[in-house]
Amino acid sequence: NYGVEALTAVSSELKQRGVPLVSNQIQYSLLYRYPEENDLKRTCDDLGIKILAYSPLNQGFLTGKYTMENLPKGPRASIARKLLLDPGFTELMNSMQSVAEQSSSTKAQVALAWCIAKGTCPIPGARNLRQARENCAALDIELNKEQVSLLDAAAERVSPPITPDSLPFPKYDKGLGIRMFDS
Image (cartoon, rainbow, N blue to C red; front, side, top):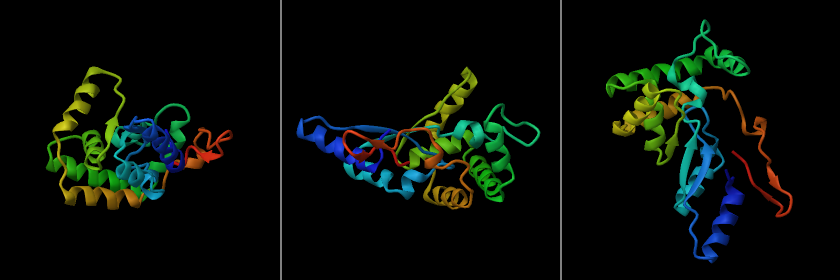
């Protein structure tokens, strides 16, 4: 879960020892695109480091299962309300539905296929066999450039429900004096 500075430092140190850094597990989804904004994704791509995209369905928000009448329990309910009242989120969900209809898939599969189209390896959760099968079926969906562009444009109009600064991860390594986490 390295940011740009830590990723570059660790990759360099490992390379000197003949060991490649092959992956970086970070949050990345249509609703959490900070790795694109802060160059973490570009740095991973440039260094040949595969992104393992955790929370690619953004805790279920990208599946379309939540409505104002069906909010998640606990602290996610406030995030859900914020998203459901955001016209940008509605536009994103409509765009995802359009792509899902074009590819005979679900919104969840579209969200995972978008991550794959971006060159990442999504690692979604599944609470049951149906969800696991649905997630696996996303491997058969290949989004075209127009679909990816449509989803990118719609995602850009969503007000972020969370920001990197609101996450509980340590930002700096005190011993090394480098920024560890920035996305």
